[in-house]
Image (cartoon, one colour):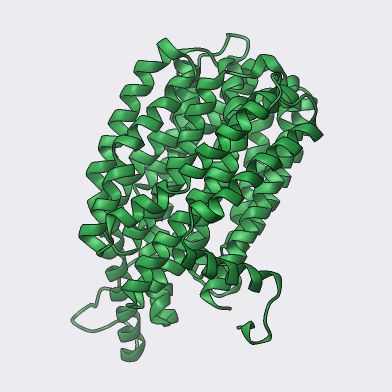
Length: 534
């Protein structure tokens, strides 16, 4: 399968999962909020977000594995990949143990972080204990990076789909039967076990030494100057250990910068519900969740463009064709901006109608939350593509100062704005921090490190916005004053708005050369040619 076809398969699988989560969320979220109550629903959202912060205890190891595994696979030598996996597995095993200890220590103080009523505190603590039970099996989850570096993330997506279905079914059943936050934690733990177990099984069947990587290594020490075993076997084992040590050193070189880089990203993505629960009220998280959900779904789908293409772009970079690499990164940037604008325009204009139909008018948190969530959903996926471009080329360290600055701005604005602007505060903090750092700085960094033309990247990201503004100005006066009153009406309006944007963007955002190239790609997807079966 060619690189283009693998990327297309990865994106198609991601799109299918996104459609499933959209449909599942539409059905399940109002049911869960009704059965749990707003406070318990908000507390669970905040707790699950807090649990995500445990990934920082990996200290950037998963991110460091990506360039290391990619290089080992590019060499085509199985021994190198196995040595890299063993080195990574030992580090990830230690990180998993640390996550277990920290989560166990958080059980007595979780009520301070997520201030629920006294009657709900035992449920919250038991839910945290339930999440603890799923930590050990996560020690094998690093196999996901191996699969993605093989450009087979569609396999991971299939397992994510299974995880989602298992988690959703268990969450609904347990919420209906009154298990509260603990039931949601049990459902999440069950889904995580299914995901990590399936990922590990795929690579174990391929002979990847995942379990060997989790065992401690005891170095051979010669006694009396002689090797303890046959000379050939000892020499081979020593060579394997030396290779493993080389990969371990390479992981240590990357994981520090990746950790600092992730610290900034986590502040943007995994702190909002926690800040709302901590500064305002866990019940306020419910309206916050429902109001931002439409834009989040669009942003997630756009982010999957990056997930589907980063391995192929990394292969192109390491293959030496740097001109083609720069062209493809700019092309992917424009594609992400176009998809984001096409999805966010109807999401913004129809969000109040969407939330009202979905969860009730009382759970709509206002236009400021809608606008801020749209800005975040547009900025983050595009900057993630630029992150991967620098990451694949080994320039993670250059991103660290920017990431720390973004994290500081995000935390300062989020905590400063939330008491005054309510639940919109954390989203505004995220949007401001990314607009003030990554949105303008990363193209300049890519020019200096990789030879990009910064104005090409700015144009790729911003040019699709002009037809979005035009389509919005046309659509807004045409919408009825009360918005859509039924689901069919909502879908018709959304399709008309998105379709009008696509037509405008085809002529206003794409050059003639891009229209010809993209037209050929689309026609091949619809009518595959006989000679295109590669």
